[in-house]
Image (tube, rainbow, N blue to C red; front, side, top):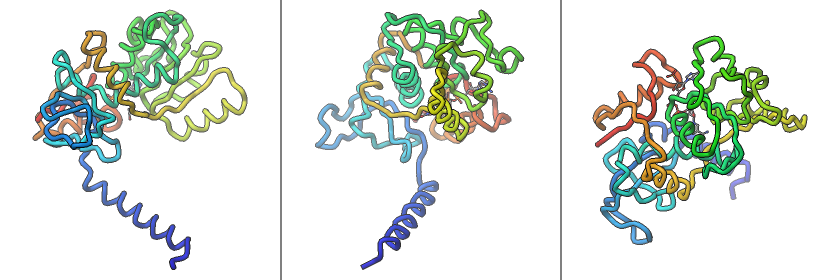
Length: 282
Ligand SMILES: NC(=O)c1ccc[n+]([C@@H]2O[C@H](COP(=O)([O-])OP(=O)(O)OC[C@H]3O[C@@H](n4cnc5c(N)ncnc54)[C@H](OP(=O)(O)O)[C@@H]3O)[C@@H](O)[C@H]2O)c1
């Protein structure tokens, strides 16, 4: 019998080797929208030729291909009013924007909740574009829609609202800005929801909890849910939510799309940042 530590070491070795190998074999992109080609007999709600939008697993991806395998629980019907590119923009960016506003900030999107003042950083990005529109549905005063800050200008980099209002929530969609920049701009119980959390986010989160601070910083990771994706598709169908498309690339130029996509986060020299979503079409 293999001793337990050896088993753990073997498991760890296999696990990390498979992770390392996966880097070379994974086909990235986890947002897809088009048509079901083949459906497993176990699938109840879809048949071949149904138009769909799906979220593929973030670890496996698979979207940069002519065919992808999607799980039924994270696949939703795409009505004729929602084009494939409009649907394809939704899964990751739309879901995290929705989760940040409804789950983390507790907003109700029926417009009947109390008026809140919300700052959305990187509001021209894929997530930010959805977050601004969803925040408006929730009866909020949303910076990026009612007021705009340019982060390259001094007042913008200080995150000061032009009207002097303090923020009840910040949906933070970029890695820039430490807590010290947010804090003076938050209302008494203001909360920053950080969807790009790093070590400093986690440290500040713990510190604020331990000191019972009224102002809070919450790291947020996507928990994809089929019902939320269905809700977003319905909003697009009703004309309440738009997918802002920066550029469409053919699949043969997926590399260019990828380069443009990462330029929003790091390599600023490539060809300018995307404004909204980048779509790859077969
Ligand atoms: N937590 C999760 O589960 C989750 C899920 C989805 C995405 N994310 C993360 O969320 C972030 C945003 O994603 P995305 O798809 O919206 O990215 P994106 O489309 O590439 O947008 C990035 C945006 O950031 C803006 N930006 C860059 N530096 C900035 C700064 N210093 N201050 C303010 N804005 C700045 C850019 O604006 P300009 O072009 O004007 O410079 C650009 O519009 C990414 O880091 C992504 O990894 C997290």
